[in-house]
Structure formats: C-alpha cells, structure tokens
Image (cartoon, helix red, strand yellow):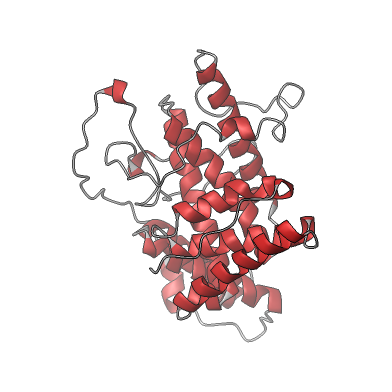
Amino acid sequence: MASLATLPPLPPQFKSIQHHLRTAQEHDKRDPVVAYYCRLYAMQTGMKIDSKTPECRKFLSRLMDQLEALKKQLGDNEAITQEIVGSAHLENYALKMFLYADNEDRAGRFHKNMIKSFYTASLLIDVITVFGELTDENVKHRKYARWKATYIHNCLKNGETPQAGPVGIEEDNVDVEENEDAGATSLPTQPLQPSSSTYDPSNMPSSGYAGIQIPPGAHAPANTPAEVPHSTGVTGNTIQPTPQTIPAIDPALFSTVSQGDIRLTPEDFARAQKYCKYAGSALQYEDVSTAVQNLQKALKLLTTGRE
C-alpha cells in the first residue's frame, strides 16, 4: 500500500482521538480496512470537537486527504463500499482482539502487549460507532476492556500482581476516563510482530462475564499484536493448525422450506444479512465454528421468522 501524506502536529483539542489515529497507523499494513475506519472515526469526532480554528482545520483537511487516498486504494473492497460488511469486519476484529487479551488475562499472563490488546479493542469499539449506536454488548465489552487495561497497567507499574480473570469493576475506585492515558502511554507505538507462542485458539473461553456472552469458537486473529515477556523463557515455535470443533447442524435445516405464512420484516432481513456477513468475516480468520453458527442463525430466521 502506498504511503500516506504525513499529518501535521495534533492540536491539543484532539487529544481524545490520538490513540485512534495511532491505531490507524499501526494497521496501515496489517489491516487497511481497520486503519481506514479508525481515521474516519477520528475525522468525524474531530469535526464535532473543533472544525473552525486554523490548526484544527489544517489537521482535518490533511486527515481528509488520507481518507480519500485510502478509499481510492481500497475502492474495490466490500468492507469499504458496503457498510454492513465494514461493520462486521470491524466488530469481529475488535472482538477477537478482546478475546486474545481476555485469554491471556485468565491464564495470568500479564504483559504490555496483552494490555495493549485490551486497550486497542476498546478503541476499535469506539470506531464501530461510525456505523451507528453500539449494542449493549459492545458497550459492556468496551467498558470492561478499557478498565482492565488500566487496572493491569497500574498493578504492574506499582509492582503488584493483578487479579486474573473476570473481576467486578469497582466504579468508586476506578475512573476509566481519568485513567485512560495511563492504560496506553507506556504501550509500544510501533506495529508489533505476532508471536507464535502467546495464544491457543482452543483455550478461548466460551462464555463471558457480567452478562457478556462470548461467541463459542471465536479466537484471536493471526495478526493480533502479541509478544511473550522475556522472563517466560518461551521460544517462538511454528504454530500448528488447531483442530476445530464444528457445531452440530440441525438436520431439519437441510430440508427447510420457507413457510407460506411467514412474513419477514425489514429488520429480519437486515439481521439475516448481518449473520451472513459475520460468517464471511469469521472465515477470513478460518473460524469455521463461528461461521457455521451464524449461517445457521440466518437460515433459521429466514425460514421460520424466529431466531
């Protein structure tokens, strides 16, 4: 991908989008679609903050040039031309990054790149708002991920051992917004090369916490930033393909014919289309289980009118 024009210094008014822009830069080669939408979010947010002062206008103008260049380069990509595909791509990427960090946390493997993955997942959920309001589930994921990143960062900084796994968010003791920078300032700013020994897709949790349901079969994408701390002594061996458990398929779905009295609403069609896009996105990560489950949901909805 061709290099993009350099942005001018970030105006102080735009401090709240600095990490989204850094995430965009880190994904320019890793996942240009993610990079594009991170910049789009920064552009939309910046316009709302200040589009009148000279320094802000100059910055936004240059950012717009980057967006137009990216859109031209990705013009034939469905994730750019079709919002529902872009939304599914971004949501799946954010969730898988969240799951990678959550798996490391549950296993008690605390390191900077796990913190970075938690925090980046929360930033990407911010970005999903370019497609509309977040679901309650995504709001919970974002809040938990950002809090976890701050909590673990502060524990390591203070020489304390974080509590592994799901814990309740102590609202009175932790202010996510005030500690946002603390959860990111010490993180690496350069794109990280994936380490082959930091996660095992077969060990991903199948259920969530605090009401958050994690889709079974989901696992971290191959380009999730990851790095094993030197103290672990783990060497980077080549990953062997992990056998996947394919969910049982309801035999009735093979011979299902849409019932004549079923009337599907526009919302039903939209949900079915979204399930199909989620399935396609899951296949990009060779996540057969999640793809099959989403396709079954779409077929059931279209043939019965129920989920």
